[in-house]
Image 1 (tube, rainbow, N blue to C red):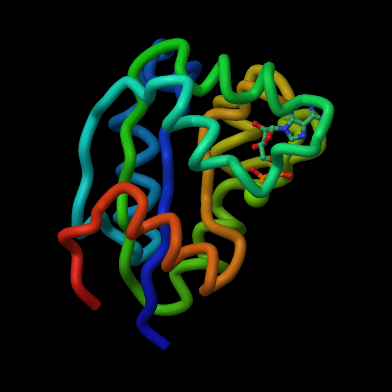
Image 2 (cartoon, rainbow, N blue to C red):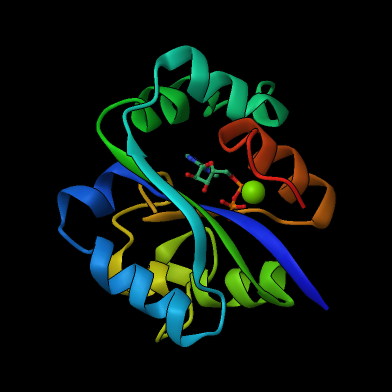
Length: 137
Ligand code: ADP
Ligand code: MG
């Protein structure tokens, strides 16, 4: 099934100059971007985006980190885009991510782990609408 997912190239990956490598991986996996923008999140935007995690102990660190520099936000589209992207990303902790995944290649730590990807179709819809309200399905 053709579907959409939201990805974010996080500040650590932008600083490492691997935007191009990461977008190439999306394209080669059949989930090219249909919308993208580079921006620096405010702390408020980062907290809004990660609101589901607001009770987690790392919430303040995570949202400070996500607002620490430019990110690239992308809506990706393709067959099974949500799972295809999660498989491309690898495990949350780059040390546990499978060889060949984006996080294994580029993640610096469990927090600065190079990319975000939606985890289910409901969250994908909410997350795409958060950054791309103009995108209609
Ligand atoms: P994922 O991004 O793999 O879906 P989660 O949704 O569980 O992972 O967590 C969201 C983000 O919060 C992670 O990508 C990572 O940046 C950060 N994070 C998760 N767990 C931790 C942790 N134990 N310590 C610090 N940051 C974390
Ligand atoms: Mg998640």
